[in-house]
Image 1 (cartoon, helix red, strand yellow):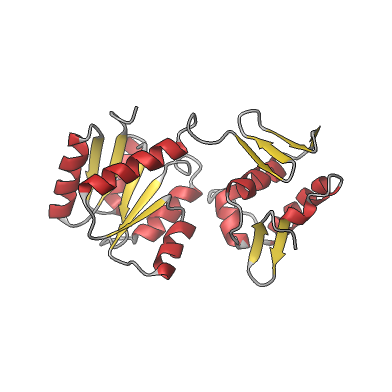
Image 2 (image 1 turned 90 degrees about the vertical axis):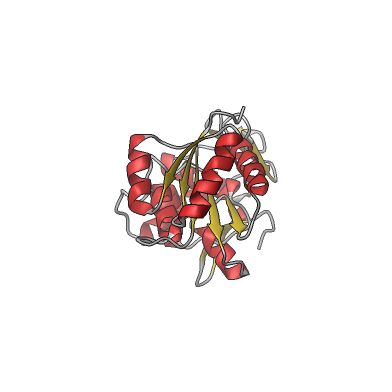
Length: 232
């Protein structure tokens, strides 16, 4: 059930904010509206939203920066984000997704499209709606059971290596820099040097060597790391 879900709408243009809030409330959502990031932060502190609808261009802090801050904070990193923007270039969309957005809607758009996109994102990110088992080449990640098996045998992983592998397997075929991995796996509240990522990558590969899955975790020279079923 999507009705009753609490949404945070961050949009600085009053007319658009009021129109979208009205449309979303008619669709059955509970809506808290904010005109800038400062107001958004107060709203999140008061009540954690089920989803954030975030304009890119805001008067105090950009939507991209606020999205990154939400994803760095362990308390808010799982909140899905839909970015709203007039910027429709491919590079802009990539920046939005890299910042942690789950969807990206280019203005102008209809309220009906936004409601449909919200429903799709909420279903996709809900604990009961998300895939609880992810598999690549006989390497199986059981998210519900918090375990990894390879060729039917349990793989022993430390907590950091498990979080790394879980992130990689749920975000395959994309290159992540060390700083992005620190944000997404370690979180923004923990100070860790970027070279620490390399240490845990080596440990993860060593754990996957026996089952011949180490090659799934690939180094992309000058860019970072990628998890890919297409072995190098």
